[in-house]
Length: 365
Image 1 (cartoon, rainbow, N blue to C red):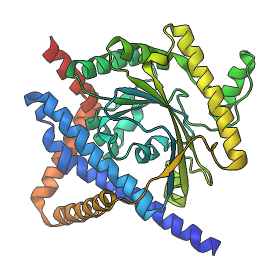
Image 2 (image 1 turned 90 degrees about the vertical axis):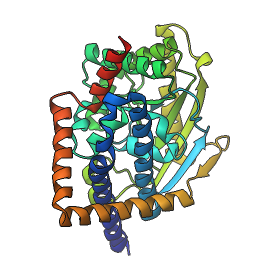
Image 3 (image 1 turned 180 degrees about the vertical axis):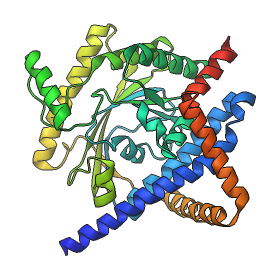
Image 4 (image 1 turned 120 degrees about the vertical axis):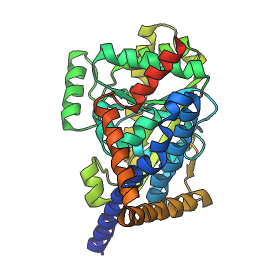
């Protein structure tokens, strides 16, 4: 029986990865690519369309996780208010945490969220192109250029009076033996206890971004999210492909109003460190009892009708687009042109995301 369950999970993993890749690769060309000229004609309309098209697409992986793969998704603590500007900070347990977070943001907060990711991810065909059109922030891991990017992005949000939920992983990388070794070395150097379930956060990016969002009046609250995998942990994309997604994903969400944050940079650093100390304790207690304290009320993500609609519509679109490519030379030419334009944006212009920021700055001046 266990062998059969393992095989079924592997099949689900292959289907999930295949359908997600096809939906992003085909959707980025057939749906998002025609909107690119709006960057010259109506930048605000491009941004609105991009946010909502991406949100509709992100509902598809949520549907695949919950309906196809039957992942038990539970959310504890506070609700995320999509009508408020917020900074989301979360522990980075696996390379796939950003993807799984969409289940906690679904449905209302999906059009507002922006993820801060490594620059290499924008080069991924399909998914990377879609993320560029979504206006996600791809960092270089060089502080001089990264802080400039943060400044331009937050100024852009403030100028257009948009709502945003900005996701930052303060740890900077996922929890793995190498990052844990570095975290242990930091703890030893600074006379701090070693962390067993997360790694020490990097404070500079968080304090800079929080202070910048406050400066431009686009920070109403901070959500401290702890992601937990109660059963197995799927660490990377290859594991997801071979073993399928984790059977359960829990989120503990704590809301902090912007007025609660310390004023000085030093106190902000201490505040973030305290959050991670509490996070380590909560994770340790969770893995002992496999549950959060009763004060954190939990709720499950159910297969609401909209998820079924997303599953059916996006799967049907994948079938239609594949049929179109196999039967129409014009569709093939359109797909090749679209892919070529994305490659031009990615490798020559720095990505649709950077080009959009340059368009904003040009219009501003």
